[in-house]
Image (tube, rainbow, N blue to C red):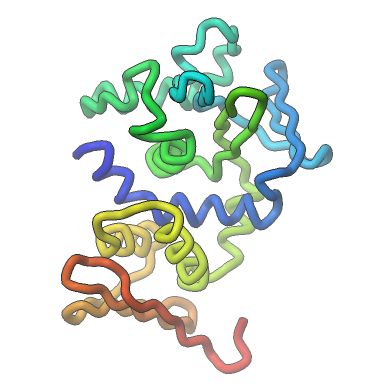
Amino acid sequence: MTFDDLLLEHVFSSFDKQLTILDVHSDDDTWAFSLETGLLTLGGTVDYPAQILGTESHLSETWRWAWANEASQIPEALLAATRDLRSFGEANRLDELTTADLSLDDADGDVFGLFALGILGKQAYYSCPYEGGRMIVLLDDPRLQRQRDAKNPLLRALDAIPQAISTFEFPTHRPSFESYLRQCGVPFDIQGETLSAEHAGITLGATFDDQGRLTDLDVDRPEGGP
């Protein structure tokens, strides 16, 4: 599979994870990161264990993987995730994951963050801006998993999938939608261009055009439900 194929397989689930962290912390929260402890502190109060994925330079308009950033002397303990992703790229012949520096015209930190969440199973990524660029870190914290699990995955889909579609360009939506439901463990039925799924009393219906692009999405909730 290509990088783009794998991104499409995981993108809706990864975007769903991102909404969980953004429910708690906005993009403009203050941040501090300790190379000694590997903790990302958001809003001055909440700490998350983090791994460094890579950095963007807005001067050269390039992305650099953390495994290639020798000048920053990043502790090896904070490079495990980016090295795992590089190994995955080597095993699957994905140049995007094994090339040290890449043009932001091809992919940026948000794309690589979403990709990493799917492949590595992390809980979220966070963008840490600084003068001239930004750092992308991966978070793996059970608090985020518990927060996400507290909400029906079909209701999460109603939030996450339209936002993902409005944020990124996709050639088709249906394979990503089906992959999202499989990853959530939700069975679904397909009749022509219509998909239906049910989980814990919530019923979801999605309609696609002949190119697999989402044209309609709605849910039925039990009376008195959330």
